Image (cartoon, rainbow, N blue to C red; front, side, top):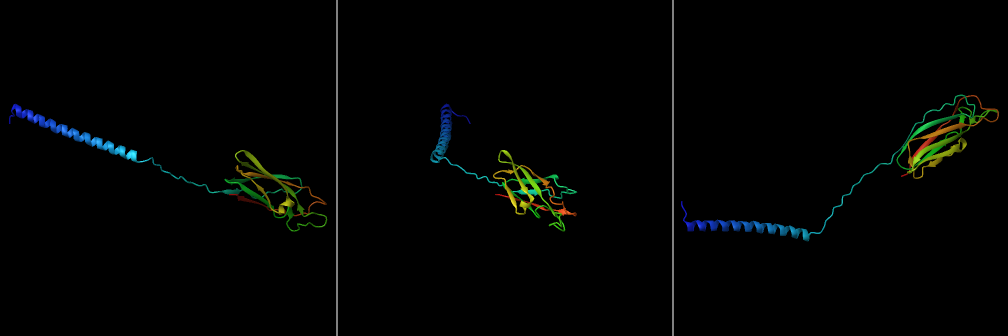
Length: 194
């Protein structure tokens, strides 16, 4: 099919008019979309979101060590040291209590005749702490005073990894000690302060 010149001009004008209409439609759609976006951002105020993050660390205090200390032949003036484990992630109290107030004769703790049945001692305690500056929690106790529990407090400090006790036996008095076996139980109790 052949178009005449006047028909060709009309077809071109129609095609251009259709293209212009399509362009106007695209331009209008873009304008509406931009206007809608502006309306949303203009009408909406700033918003925020809070996220709550939680966690916890359980208070933990552990004491380890213990066992037997053997002085052998009791002559008095003997010294022994023993380390113990202490792990505590909160401030703590540590208590010491003597079962017999000294090394006591197993059968005759009151002695017999001129011979004594008990040998006293001095207990020294040293426990490194941190708060946040390192310090040493320490105490010195006579065994006869330890029959009533004695307590040391770390204040706001926490344990730095253990402690040490030192026991120094007294010199026997009177005629000396009654022959036989001597024994003592020193109880150490750890209590967290939360």
